[in-house]
Length: 113
Image (cartoon, rainbow, N blue to C red):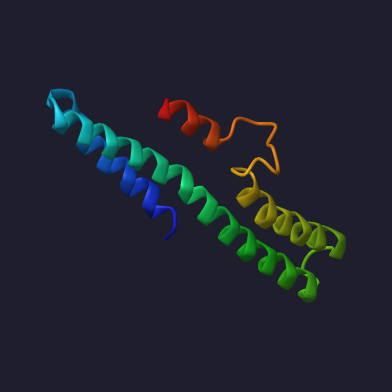
């Protein structure tokens, strides 16, 4: 459900783009501002949806460990990595944790220039 927000923002961006190409003056500035905010909305939805996914997967791995459906070491490794996901994703935009891969935040900084 949370990932419906960036999909809707992309559809809205597709409807704003043709209008922005023909707009002049203050309409062009408003269209550019709307497009920029829609692009930023996609990036910020990661900050919300990834920790929610992490909490859900941590609970799932915990249930698997308690039921002994999978080996305990593997299940608790899933719990640990899900908890790290919940902690690390919100800290990345603050640059407390730095990803070694290209992140959505770097793309957003490039698009805002």
